[in-house]
Each structure stands twice: as C-alpha cells, then as structure tokens.
Image (cartoon, rainbow, N blue to C red; front, side):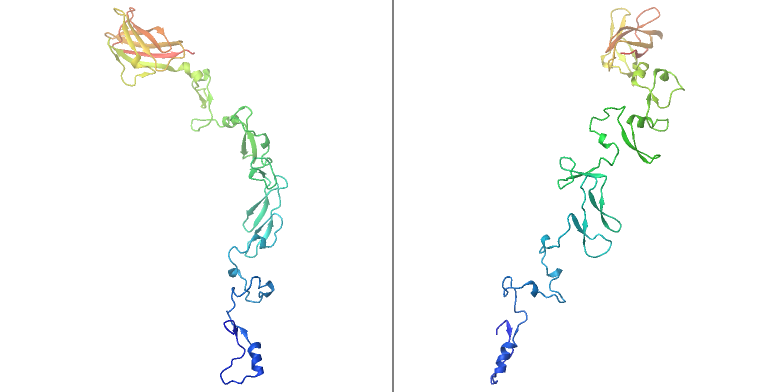
Amino acid sequence: MGTYLTKGETFATGNTVTAAKLNNLVDNATVTAGSIGSTELANAAVTADKISTASPQPVTTGTIRANAVSNAKLAAMGSQTVKVRATNSTGDASDLAMIGGSSNGSSKMLVGTSDSINAVVADEFKLVNSSDADVTNNTAAKLRLHTTAITGQTDLTSGSPVSDPANDRLLLYDQSATSLVKISPRHLIGSQTATSSLSGSVTISTTAEATRTGTTSASAVLGAAVGSPMLAKAWAKFSHDGSNFSWGTNRTFNIDQSSCTHSNSGGSNHIFTIAFDEDMPSTNYIIVGSAFGGTGIPLFPYLVTPAVGSFTIKFLSTTSSSLLPDTEANIVVYSLGS
C-alpha cells in the first residue's frame, strides 16, 4: 500500500489465502505515522471541528506563527478602553475604560499607582487641537493647563513685558496663607530691602540724603540725577616746562592728554587748552585747583573759555602774571548741570 498505509494482513509465499485474511488486509490497514504532510492535504481540508481539544492541545503559543493573529482576531473590546493588567498580580489582561472628555476638564489619563493602573480624571488639564482651540474629540493634539486650574488665568494675556508696572501681577505661593496669591513685581522687589550684609532692593537717595551722613538708609544709593553734580567730571595732575606736558602715571581722569596744548602769545601769557575724553553736557562747569611755578610761586587757575569738549586756562600769580606750572598743577572739573 505504499508509503501512506500499513497493511492489515501480510502474506508470505505459501500462505493460504482466505476471505477473512483478504478482509483484514483492507479493514485493518492504518495510515502510516508521519506519511501525511501539508502537501498531501487539500486547501481547507482541515476544519475547526477536526482539531483536537484534548491534552496536549495542538495549538499553543509556540505553534502560532509570529504576527499571525491580527487585531480583528482578538475578542471585541468595549468603547474607548485599553487592554492592561491593571492589578498588582500576574494574570489575564482586562479592558480598562477610558471614556471621558465630554467636556474639557473631564479627560482621563492612564497612570500607574503603587499597586494598580488607573484611569484618572485630569480636571486641571484640557485638550486643544493643533490650532490651540479647545476640543473634546479625536482632533485633540495637545494637553494644556485648564483655565480653572489657576484663578484668574483667563485674564492673562501675551504682551510686552511689564507693560503696566503699576498694575501687572505675578503669581506667588504664600507660605503663611498656604495659598497662591497675586502680587505686583514692584511690591515684591520692594519688600526685599538691601542691607549692609544682605542683597535686595535699593532706593535712590535724595539730594538731602546724599549730602548728610548718619541719617541715610543703608538701601539708599546715589543716582545719576543727584550724584552727577556732586562728582568730579574730570581731573588732572601735571606740569609743563614751556615745551611739553608731564602727566605722570594714573594722574588724569577724562582728560585727552594727546589733544591738550600750550600757547604763549608773548611774555608771560601762557594759555593751556585742556581737552576732555568725554564731552561735558554743557559749558556750565567750574574749575578748581592749585599750581606752583618758577621757584615755588603759588598759582591759581583762571578759566578763560569753557567749551563742551575742552577749556582754556591760565595759571596766575599774585601779580596777575600768567606763569608756567613747571612744578605742579592740579585741576578738578565739576559740572553744574545740563
């Protein structure tokens, strides 16, 4: 019977052939084990009721081809559910309902706890689409902080920084009240006053405060408006031998040494032009100083012509002679305002 069948009766030479043996030849024949393979079976020849359910079962994880079971072959799931093992134990998966989002603030998020996976309501968040418009359906593309999460959030607008410093507000957690409060940046900064040992906010001193000692707050600083007339705008210490200036090292401030000149119209009429590095705001300034010339003769500076970029000066003796400050000259410039 070839490869596929094992005979029910085997005859040898000299055996008597009987009707019973002939019947056994066919009736007791069996299919040879392993002789029927996939090529011997016709398409759709094996139906579901022909697959054994007895142990050991023929269909197991190891006998299913990878990617052979599609989503369509899985058991139907409930609307808006996810398949998870939600409990803190080994076992079958279950369908966890995620239905929510009928209104913004009722959306659900999947979170893991210490012993489970839960679908929790994210009431402090809302869904928006790709254009940042509020949505509650499948067009949702982003998760945003809900307008109800922070009181007054709807009043927040995008604009230039500190567009209204008197009324702008910051959100701050108040430890004493254990709650969020709003405060203006001005009041927040002003509440942290600087001291001699702690940084913080400062105030600009008034003229009265700047001219007194012992009564000024430690947080008051000298501002430009008050301090400018009080501070020297330029100063220099030099000498001149009739031909050249001698400036020394670190003996000038706001003086353009290379542009300073000397002239003598004859006799003892020495005139000096002193140039500034940075111009004065106006010609409303004064010169104070002292000088010595000749054999230690005391001289005093006399402002001839003030200009914003320079000034001309003479050094006069007690006899009104204009002498060279060949020993030493000291001058300080104070601006009286714009």
